[in-house]
Length: 260
Image (cartoon, rainbow, N blue to C red):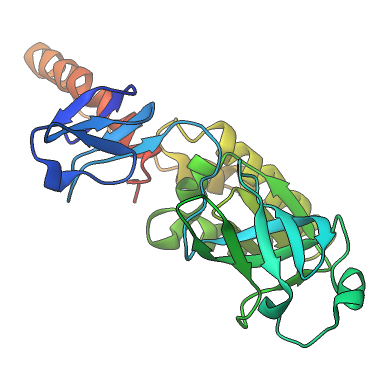
C-alpha cells in the first residue's frame, strides 16, 4: 500500500533522499514529523490531519489587518506567526500617515507570502495583479490541512463548486475562503464548503457534494443503478475478502485528494 496513517516519530524509510513535507531525517533514516497520512509516491510526504497553517513563500492566502505600525501592516494569517505587509509592497504610493486610510484594522486582503526567513519573519505583498483588498463577499475558515480536498484533483472540486453556485471562490492556503456572488449562490457555496470539511474522510466526496448541491437547488438527481447478476458462493466470498483488503486504502485516497 502506498499510503498509511502515521504518528510523529514513526519510521518511514532508510532512503533520506525520499524525505519531503511532514518528515525529518535522523541518522540517514526518514521519520514522520506529524500525525497524518503518509504518501510514498515520488518521495515520502505526510499530510497532517490537523494543525496550524505554516506559511511558505509563494502561498496565496487571505489575511486580516490586526495592527498598523510605522511603514508596516501587521496581518493575521491564521498561523502562529504574523505576516508583515510593508508600505512598499502595495501597488500605489502612499504616505505613512495615510496607511490607516488604505487598509484599516479588521479589513481583509488577498495576499501572497513573498518570503519567510529562518526566524519565521513572514513578509507579504500586494504587488501582483491577482492580489487586492477584499471589499465584498463572504469569508469562511476551514482546516488548512484540508485545503487540497476543497480544490480537488486537477481543480475538479473547486471548478464544480464555481459552476454550480455561480460564485467566484478563492481558497487560500491558510484555510480562509473568499466567496463572491449573489446572496443565494454564496449561501449554497458556504453550505457545500462546510459539508466538504466535515466529510473529507468519507469516500465518494465529489459525487456526494454534487448530489447535495443539486438537491439544494431543487434539481433532479440521476441515480445510476448497476445491473445485478447472480454470483456463486465462492465469488461472493472472494469479493468480500477483496473489499476488506482495499477498504482502508479508499479512505486514505480520499484524505490525500486522489479521488478522480
